[in-house]
Length: 143
Image 1 (cartoon, rainbow, N blue to C red):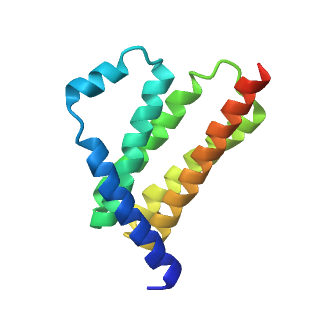
Image 2: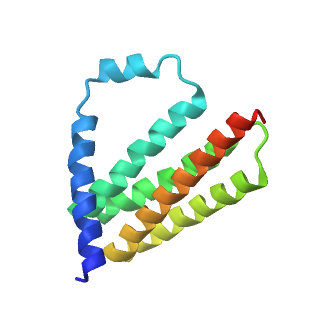
Image 3: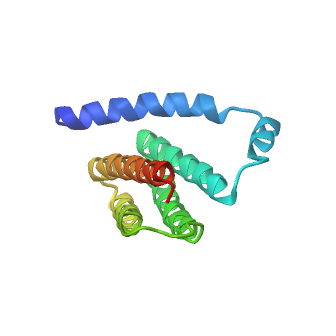
């Protein structure tokens, strides 16, 4: 295993540990947090849960979990686009990229290719970050 792959797996392991601590919250607390959130915010929360499932699946070598989470992420991404009132061309590109990345992740999970699936997860995280920054920029510009 080469050094970048080892580093990615160690990072994924640490993130999994941290996400398991976050996932241990009481259901009542999660219900209370859900109140007052928009449907898009709830979809984003679901997306985060699925991203954590990918991370967990990769860490535990559970490719069925990774594949299922990839499918769910693609569905959430499609649903989220219906909640954007006036999508910009950049938003549409980012959204399409994310959906293609979920398809890649699903395929790599089926192939049980942990290195490629790990890189897919990294790419997806970068895409999410770009999209959220883009949406903040639009909000700041008042568009």
